[in-house]
Image (tube, rainbow, N blue to C red; front, side, top):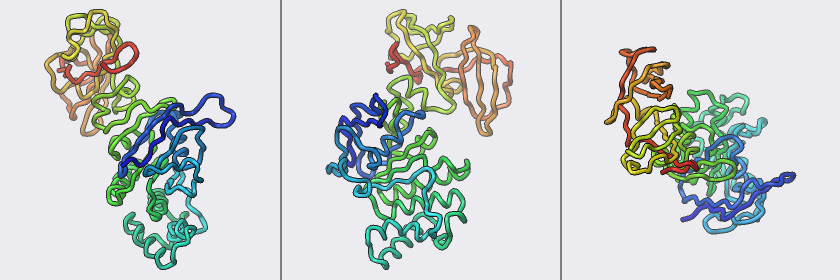
Length: 355
């Protein structure tokens, strides 16, 4: 069942000549957990506000369960929005904050109390109901904001950078909690995040945006392994992919600008010579397994606990990055010859599209 679709939607803010979105189309399945990610200014939050009814669209339709909602006010759409700053009412208790949307809707008082208790248990804040927001930690405030959004049982839950104000430990905990709650309730969720770890770990699918355009929608694994272009390949991955510019040799190899040669994936073995290419090498594909050996000098070492990150400079100055299980048998300045898994390398044509 299609839950949301914006067909050829356009959005333009007053005072701006160019549209924020043009000819945008997105379909989200009911019960899906979609992450919108991309650089600052790519249009993630604007798209969320458009779905929520906080911004008008100039053309197109927004459909929820097949019903157009673009002409409904935000309060009339069955869509809940959790903001980055939580937007809790400081003068109300946790219980009153959670109950507020049900009271506005005119629900029975006894039913409101039951629903507040139930959602508090689901979000693990039942012992906080008598407190006010100022008495809560950031993680607790996030749970309250989430409970207030979920208690009305909306069709869609929108979360705009909900973990941005939390420290690293709380972010990790809340990533798991939000995913747990989404799976337990079966609600359709759309989350905006800059954090690619959040995008990769919390969702069914990822939509990567740039300059008001959705570049690719796929599962995290599929997008990581098969990005549609250089931008997506460079955006996903930590440590980031190494992107080399050069051309094919005509005999199954890639010649980096500067002279170094690397093997091409077998699918590109017949690429004509002098064809411009970009070759993407992820750190996990160099130094572990592979049929080719690449030699160079270790010029950077960064221990990361269970893993160690290395930069290896080849004889022509090309730098490859390798991440491996923690090891102390090699150090800065050592010469190494490590395997390269050429079949896992990513290649892009002169326009930046995957080949």
